[in-house]
Image (cartoon, rainbow, N blue to C red; front, side):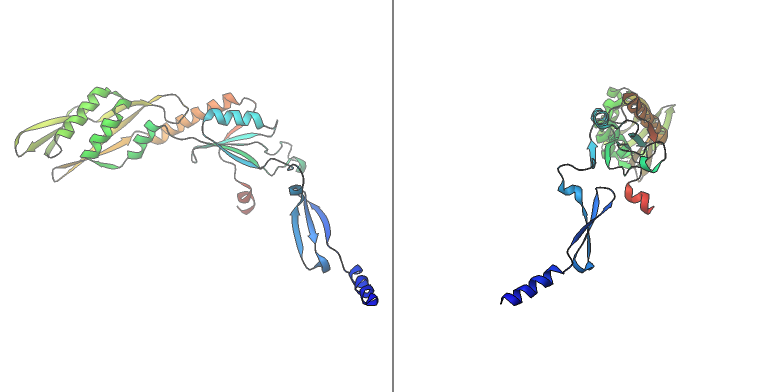
Length: 280
């Protein structure tokens, strides 16, 4: 029995043992080569240490102030960059961007990011939601009642009166539309049990609201278009020069971020993630 045991022990002593082979890289990666070299398992050794080798985090902030505060707290001197994309309606800070020397040692994996989505204010979002979408007379009336306070020309009370007038003739048939003067149309209607009449509606509105959350109110304009089919009215709200308005207000927003983060470069555009960088 002892002889058999000795043979087994001798055989085990000659078996190839698993080896840990450091290969470097992000997170201090090592290769674990298992017996006989049949398999190789990669392990990030930092997972077995008290602290990670670098911050790996993606943080979504809800307000401009929170975004600025977070970037200030975690900025890395000479490395942090801010990217602002109107297409994405997003401001993105990468705290650990590459160094400016271009040397290999200045490159970074870029694993610490903060984002702030430049959301529309509730007021502007309401107008943007109906922009270009046909509204029934009932929908148009409801919309004016809800949003008349955003207007400065005509005044909110006058716009509310327009809504009430159109609400009163919901069952009437529209017979004709007359351009009374520069900024008004008059809709001629008739009903079976009441005398014919007319109601007026402005062609153009001037409104004052913030566009993006965290920006100041600004004046902008919208126009009302209409169509009549079988005596029934359909309205369309169209924000004038919407693309220009968004560019102007997003630029103001980005300028405000740059003022609050004077030591950090702010770029218009987006930084791709690591997978995009490698895979195109």
